[in-house]
Length: 150
Image 1: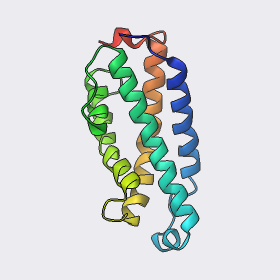
Image 2: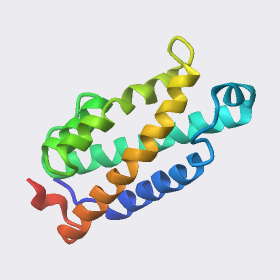
Image 3: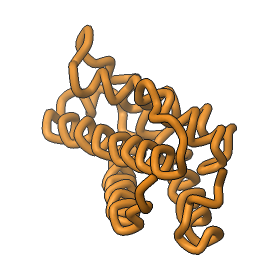
């Protein structure tokens, strides 16, 4: 087990917060307007992708560095983060499906459903601030040492 890199976690949290702030401009946007604006569409997709990937990186890093087995996939990274006490289990269940969205964004499986992307913006704005708080609280609670979370 190697030491947890708190600075990496802080940088990843900063990415999540920055992207959440940028996504505020998309909240409430009408689907037709969203579809017509290719720049906002592409920006939204990239912001969501980066946000989700930052959380997955945090999950995987903290899970492995606390002595747990690496997750089998991105979805599982959220579930294991909840099971190991890094984030609340109910929050983990709510965020885990975003791993599938990340895959669709990266690989453009079956094209992208614009309505689903807009819905994902609302979901991200609702639950990812809770994720950031849970990770920040865990860092503070453990004196920046996740090894005690087992």
